[in-house]
Image (cartoon, rainbow, N blue to C red; front, side, top):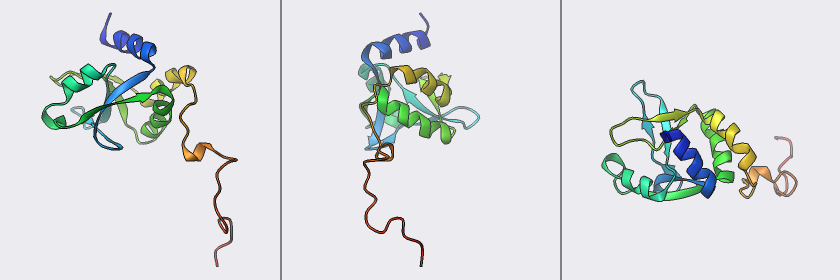
Length: 134
């Protein structure tokens, strides 16, 4: 089984991926030789912890469920940031375009994660929100 097959099989079992987080909302990134940005994802906490060295020393392992990941992949695709599957410490990566990974993930999204923007009818914009500019 190759790295990508192992990654997919493992995340389908747990329904989550692992990332390295510098501080809340700021995740480890890397670039290829052409300067293209990637967000590294791991299939287990142990593999993410093993990668927390060098530039990522002091980062903490954090998990993300499929539902939240689906929303996040949409933002990454808009910013032209792709996914690096369990990058090796030697710099070798297996890349997946964010939009393709998001499309693959859609059937597994349980919709448990919602952004404020997702709550179209329930969000209260407050008094005067739609008032014309004076």
